[in-house]
Image (tube, rainbow, N blue to C red; front, side, top):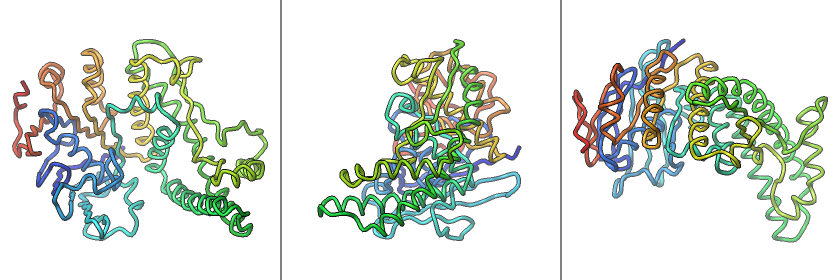
Length: 387
């Protein structure tokens, strides 16, 4: 199994960081400091170097430091089989964002995805089971895109076709006329071609991912409930002998009048959902707050295991203030997982001093103090006083 780590990070005009330097250990790293000092921003910057964007927002102007002309994030990664790699992401309003690897500019942001597999745990993970389908589709696409460049390419092409098709339908609706049949047919065929490929990959993903989910849930849950996920593409049960593409085309034909009336595409993977269960009960409807939290953590651990298996690399693991809502036993159990051989490099944020002092016994953890203004201790040895 190959490993990939980030060795160092340089932030300039990123969120509250005017200029900061951070050095990481190759295993467990703990960013400690009071709330609001910029710990999460460091995780955002690492995520930006791996996937070209923050995990909190896709809008670069929101992470640009107030009054600054541009932001820059630079990191040095190390991989067992690729050696040392320098990555830089720069954004300037009006000129956009550029990504550089080893000094060479990437033509597409998408070309960065999957080079440095990454998984993020955050306090919002419960939304994966408690909120609407869009959250789960985004979660699914994030995982499969990191494991398959072909999936990501199909997804981008699908979104382009969907945008063009919707614009055609919307324009026709506003003008109260029929859409151009040749144009509509052309975008529909593009939609079916790439949409069917996406659906087939999602079906394969759910089958493989379910095994990891069941295993990871059992590692952190005290009960014997069996977790499961179900995926019903095209919001319909297709006949086993019918191809995805055939069923897709059939449903679009059935919905064509409704689509013209509403000015939007009503069928396709952009409307799919993942149904999640504990036993026979839907998690979204019947789970307690604690069960939502545990299921969300299990989903992220399963994501890590899936990416580790598919990419044959240990992903980088980011954990943002996830301990505040966990009991002491769960914290200890989770830190044991982070310290195990199944996990590579991890970077965790925490503001509570008892996490540092009471739960890290027996763990070789690199503590990185972060102070007001995003200042990072360049030679961390001991945890700062957080009282």
